[in-house]
Length: 386
Image (cartoon, one colour):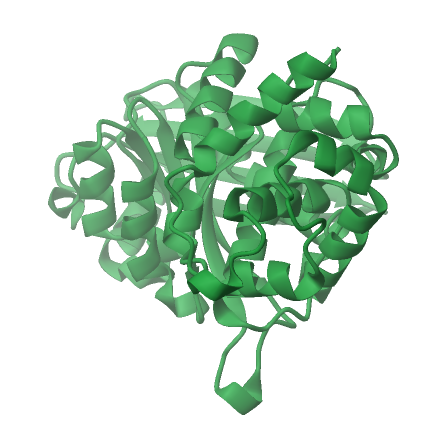
């Protein structure tokens, strides 16, 4: 059993073999690979910063010295801080690419889903700003594979408005072939749509006032078709009803082919359909309604369109919510630029590992178990659940 665990951990260590050590030679008492793997294990076990990683490592010295080369014992907190603050975030994230591909292939086999929804959205770590250094709060744009529970990539910016430039970079980091890419209205840009189609993927883009001509044209067309109950435009509908938590939700999805004379439609590569999602919510006797409009390269198939729209919110309801509740990310005061970016990635990657573990416990409980039990921690890390 110990030998199997060591082999599994060797497979983890190998992912970082190409990572360049940013330290000067006189500061290399502790092997870089050991420092990085301990940091990963520490975050899985509940650590939220370099001090907590070092404390956890010291309390698990016997375990770690049996698994990793540590010729000078357990590194101190300054070592973890220095390494994670000087590693280039792009290089650090690149080390996980093959690992993520393996996890993605396994998740696809388990779920049977070969056209996953990859949701793209941004999240701000609100307390990561440093006014004295002129450093704004970290805003990370990431890709979340909703059905797989995997964070596939991250690009950091300092302003939410920079999402428009971050999204094309993010799309180049991730294998999007065969996927459905969903993005909110800020990412509804002609260049982004073209990049997705050129990457052999489909898109479902939320449409709002930042694309005023097309937005107004879609609303006008939908309203026209509503007068005839959508009987003359080849529309398809799908309705879902849910009850729980003191409310009733009815979702209406309508998908229709793009009309030939839709103003502005010709600028969007691959555009085939437009869609509407209407949510009616009754809570405490009060009814609210929300209507959203979409453009898509998907052919007609309203259930697939509805699934993509609903799955997009997985990045908010599962990924971002978990980062704030399970990882307390919104409370983090890590403010060094590279350190906070690398920690944001460690949070997302370890969340993905926890999501892959088959036990039915909550993410909070799984993370606690990683801190309580080294065997469970190694199961999650090496993807070898018993």
